[in-house]
Image (tube, rainbow, N blue to C red; front, side):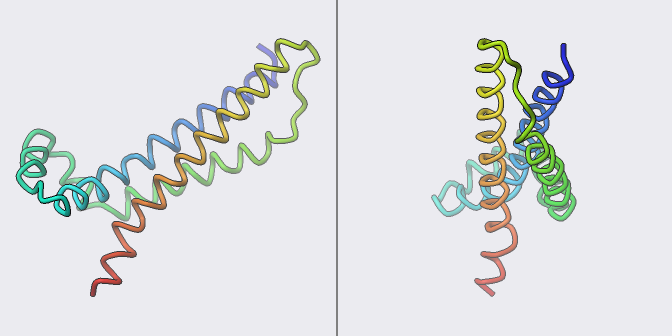
Amino acid sequence: MSRLDRALSRNAGLAAGALLASSATLVCCVLPAVLVALGAGAALAGLVTAVPQLVWLTEHKPLVFGSAAAMLAVSGAALWYGRNLPCPTDPGAARACQRLRRISVVLYGLAVASFASGFAFAFVLPALIR
């Protein structure tokens, strides 16, 4: 595996990791708010009974969001650094390189959108309601 292949694979892995970390922000903050807003408080109670770790995530919001923000920063920096790296000259490898770059950017965009919606539900909307 060439140095470029390792760098591109690392970028996709970092973007996927950032997506996973920012998904935790959705689970801790958006999911409970949406369930309660839809009148599904009993479903939320059942979910918390089945998965008690949700309570820990909710109690430690700053840690969850800080970890997700750090993963997003590292992933964004890796994508920014790798944006101008040359792709291989072989046509098949060049197409794979470009496809992997697009996948990484899409995953990163999903992660940022996930983080932003979680942040809005956890910090912005409660401040506006007060």
